Image (cartoon, rainbow over all chains, first blue to last red; front, side, top):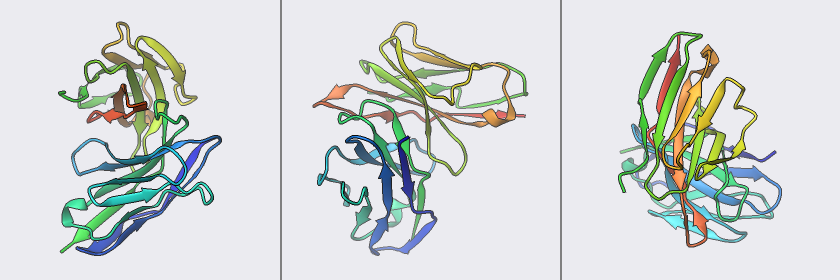
Amino acid sequence: GDSVTQMEGPVTLSEEAFLTINCTYTATGYPSLFWYVQYPGEGLQLLLKATKADDKGSNKGFEATYRKETTSFHLEKGSVQVSDSAVYFCALSDSTGGGNKLTFGTGTQLKVEL
Amino acid sequence: DTGVSQDPRHKITKRGQNVTFRCDPISEHNRLYWYRQTLGQGPEFLTYFQNEAQLEKSRLLSDRFSAERPKGSFSTLEIQRTEQGDSAMYLCASSKVAGGFYEQYFGPGTRLTVT
């Protein structure tokens, strides 16, 4: 079945550092890929998405590129802020439109310190 | 939009009791999803509806679990004869197609503790 593997946390960075959170997936067909974020005390929010190979999703300074050849969707940000501290989940949907079930990774906690 | 709401936010129950959770989706969202999240894990899919039709159920949804969406609006998730392993956060999400894409909006979750 479909699966998502992401790097374990917590990841602790200083403010303005570069962030990479690795995500790889296993799926048949052509899944859509997502990054969700969960801020402390809040629900899951969609951060960015990519629906086909070589697409780049971006939002709030975060980026991720759908790499079919390496089955990866790594999350990057050039300069993190304390307000980016949250848990980040990589996920896939087995439909191009993202309408079917989501399969999530285990989440990576990010802590950004001053 | 007021967002997806779930009730109750917290539920403590004794093993063997039945519990029911409610999810109110964003209005006009025709798809509704249930997920379960345990500590340190990502959400796991349980089931989803399009309008009132239940389109897919996970193998995780044992015969003690039942979900309904009788009028295509709110949904309920019932767990019968709860077990300690049912302790988890139960998440609801809703979506509708926009630009050929369904974005799932998540509610705050119901945290279930089975003692």
